[in-house]
Length: 170
Ligand code: APR
Image (cartoon, rainbow, N blue to C red):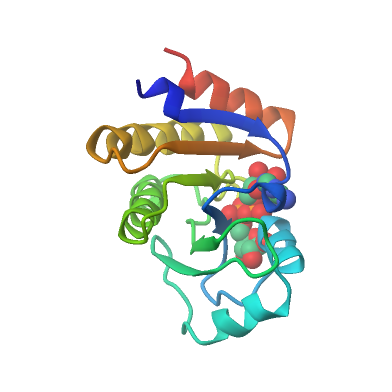
């Protein structure tokens, strides 16, 4: 059942003992504020050291690193689009982030992963449409890939949680 393999969690993503947590990064992959800052703080300096070897990451792409001091084994860094009104290909780029993260998860035998609301903070993406894209792309992957057992949508505030609960409603 698809529904049982997706869940909403109100939590700090850095505390979750899943195979991989997803980072809402920027194209430098050298850290920042928001969830990016929290993940780097919790993972420790080795994460930044590995990120320095990756040569950045274009918007809509994803790269994987170890999790170091995090309970999660991996961090999958993806760069969401900055919202600029919706006419600059933002929806397609955000959908691509989810697809590229799942492609790395399958390639690395990751079966449980947790996403923050990519682009919904500093990058200003409207919560409702971002949550709908996240859930739609996840449903497609869960239908095709039985290896992905559990996807958590981690919400750091009530507005994000209600957007995901609405997007997940049957
Ligand atoms: N756990 C889970 N979610 C979190 C956490 C956390 N510890 N901290 C923040 N969030 C949530 C935010 O509340 C928001 O809903 O993650 C979502 C994504 O917000 P941002 O972290 O601002 O990410 P984004 O909007 O994609 O902007 C990325 O911000 O931090 C910089 O380096 C990053 O330049 C990049 C930009």
